[in-house]
Image (tube, rainbow, N blue to C red; front, side):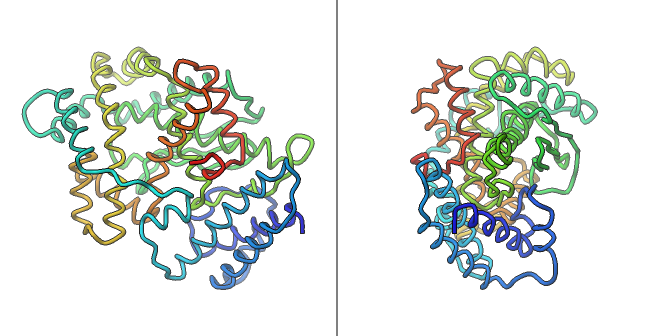
Length: 410
C-alpha cells in the first residue's frame, strides 16, 4: 500500500471513532460518501477500531516514502498514534494527566510550581493598586473593561477586520475566504471555530459570561486571523486540494481534535496574536479603536495590558488544576478554588473551566504550553520580535505545513 492508500484508511478510521466520541472529529470536508458509510448502521466496536489503528501504524511505518513525502509519513504516524491512545482511553485505560498529554499531543507538560504563580501574583499586586486581595482587585479592574452586550458584535467585527487585513499582507488566503460569527450560550468553551472546508468557517462566541476587552482581539485572532480559520484554510489549500492546486493528501480533509495537530493549531492560534499585533501595536489598536467603539475609557487600556502580561504566567494554572483534578489529588471544589486563586477567575468562571476540563481533559496544555513552544521555535528560526517580516514568514510556513510537535523538536 502507498501512503495515499493509508491516508484513506486513516480518514475513515477517524470518522468511525467519531461515532463513539462526538467531540473527536473537529472538522471534515472530504467525500460525503465516506461520511455516510461511517454514519451508517451501528458504530464499529472500539476494540476493532484499536486493532485497525495498530495495523495502520505498522503499515505506515513500513511504507517506503520519497524524501518529499517523509513529513507526510511522520504526520500520519503521529496522528495515528494519538487515535490509538484515544481509543485505549475510551475502552477504559487510565492515563495520568502527563501520560495522556504525551500520548495525544507529543509533549509531556512540565509542572509549574506554586512559587512561580505566587511570584506572578506578587507582581500583579504592584500593578493593581488598592485594598483587598489581588483576586478581588483584578476582578474590579476587569469590570472596567467588560464589553457591553450591545457592543460585543461591533467590537468583535472590528477586531476581526483588522486581524484579517494584517494577515492578508503576509498569507495567500483562498479566494473563497469567509467566515460567519454566531453568538451562543451553554457551552464549556469561550469560543470555537468550526471549519467548513472551502475556505469557510463558522465562529461561535459563548455569551454565558461577560467578555473583557482583551478577549475581543484574542478571539478574533485566535479563532480567525491568523489562527484556526487561516490554519485550516492554508492546510486545505496546500495539501487537501487535488493537484495541481494542492497535493491531494486526503488526510487533511479530517481533523481529529485529540491529536498532536492540536498543539500546533492552538499554539499558533495563541502566538499568532503577537505576530499580527507585535509590541505596542496591540495596545494602540485596542486603546484607539476598540475601547472607544465599546464605549469604554481608553485610559484603562495601558493598565489592563500590563495586567495581561502577568496573566501569561498564570495561564499555566489551568494545567496544574487539570493535572490535580484528573489525577485525583484535587477534588472538584479544590480545583475550582485553585483556579480562583491562581488564574484569578470568579467562581462562575472557574466552574466553567472545570466543565471544559471534564470534556477536553489534558487538551488544556495546547493553549499555554503550545503557545510557549511555538513562540520558542519561531524565535529559534530567527523570527524574533525585532524581525517582524521574518517572524511572519516563519509563522505562515508553520501553519501551512504538516509538521507536528516531534517534527519541530518540541
